[in-house]
Length: 447
Image 1 (cartoon, one colour):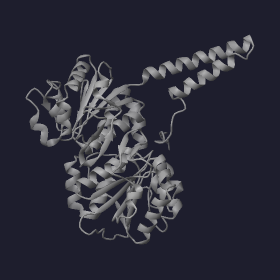
Image 2: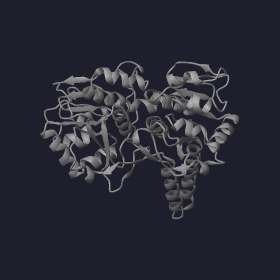
Image 3: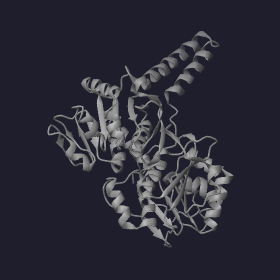
Image 4: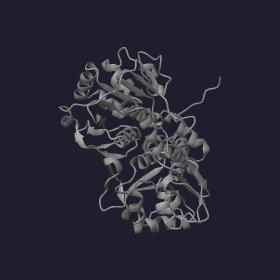
């Protein structure tokens, strides 16, 4: 049976432009020590490296993702993450006075630049996240409006999700005569000039629109396809373990079922570190806060601000030390190879997790973290679990590892970025019941 080769989500291509530049420098240095014949051979090879470097530099697409106070963090971060996986040069620009914004659900993000810094720059794609009041804040930024209008008039790709198609793009007249979609409750905000469509992702010419947090991964992959083509989109989507069919109800493998209880509002700890997979962290934080859990985001590093795996900068609520004396109903680790290794190397965090497990309290992990952080410390002993598919061999018990989400008593594990939403709403189901989990999933346009 033929197998499809997919790229590992944590790997870095050896043909990255910076690697080629270093190789070129080495070749030029060596050429000074060779005889004429050897030198001529090396010059030929140098030209090949130079050509490859120029080719790769020219193929890097420039993307602008503006953010604001009240931006929906899933819609911003997933888009940034997926586009950077594809090799795009993504600039995250704040439309406020500071680079740090307070996105929806108390998530603090730090932009790469201010929107004023982007004046005069050209982009291959501009993508607007939604959120309220995020979308109105984007709409009301005159610098952004002028930038997007000029970009559109020059034939550039532009896109928006959730409230932003209706609130921003349509108000700027950039959807007139086009098919578009948006968050369901904002569809009536479209003017008559827009052809409203209720699909999860809509592409009409140079414009891409989508519906909400639960459609963001599909939207982001569609952006990759528009920038780079279908093959690149498939290469990016494959390693993320995306759903085979979007919009359908979610499920989990629930073994040795126990009631997940809390004294009122669930107290949840989400550790983050440099190298944490930002998509996975944000799905967990966003969804559980929507469900009214009290979520504390704790940095395992020495600073509140961490740089996640795709270079998104997230500001934690507290340092881990401040969380050590608090009681948590549930501790959950996002993935990302660097983040998982940081968790595994944090004696304080591992000690906290061991106390949690020994007390039969609730804990969980996603993607690389079950294999890298939990398994080596005995935190999967006598437990069924899953993890990122390429790391399943590290699990001592692989018997349920083909499932996207596995619950074994007080433990929940899942496979990767593309299972993060299922993982998060499954946690909601365990705490609050299937009805609330489905309501939340529908609100987020996941099902």
